[in-house]
Length: 271
Image 1 (cartoon, rainbow, N blue to C red):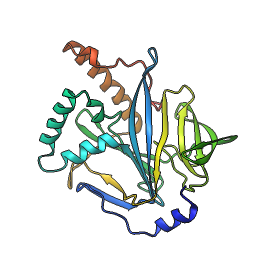
Image 2 (tube, one colour):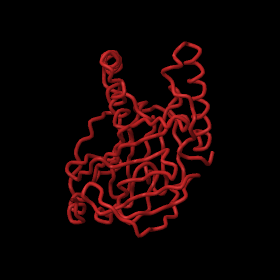
Image 3 (cartoon, rainbow, N blue to C red):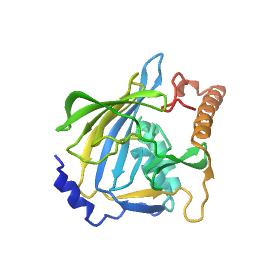
Image 4 (cartoon, rainbow, N blue to C red):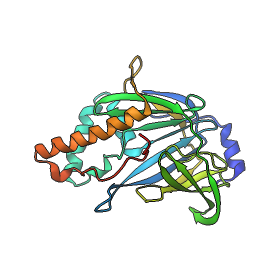
């Protein structure tokens, strides 16, 4: 178990080198966590798709992104990387392992960057977009329930946030007020979170303060590149439209069996 002393020691350790050339360091990370994200992509059939998400947290900021998304973006940022990715995709398709290269999202979410804000970088089709929003503090209600997750005693809390009722389990043994996605503001790290309908959930699978690396901003475009500025609500509406168009195009091309019909709502329902 990671103690308060261990966390404090890592606050002053030198950061490790982040293995991506197209990135900007915000600060050294003090902890790295991995979560299993489950998304119910069809509320009629109850079909769920999973993804592994990485949280790197520092003293002031954090980065949250898909492991598979980061792998693909890191690979294509290298010379010859796009060709290598195409080769891997063909190989994985033959072996029935395409899920190892796919992610639920194209988003990189940076909390408290800049200070007091949350910045999201994502792609709409092939268009890199960026939006910054106020770092809204969820109004948590602390509950009496407790349970053990990965050996840590966790307490329960609830909040209404962006159109959903969220239940979170946090541990004061890891005194970092952060969690997956845009959830934060509890007196400890969030180990598990899910909405009341269980359409979206995050369950921590690992936690480590040994060589956690850095909190960095990954850059698809490289130096001098410019992201298309967009608001959060415009992004959500565009995302909805993009998925509907993609599903329709897939049906017209005879690939309908490989596309999930949208029978669910977005994580944020206030668009």
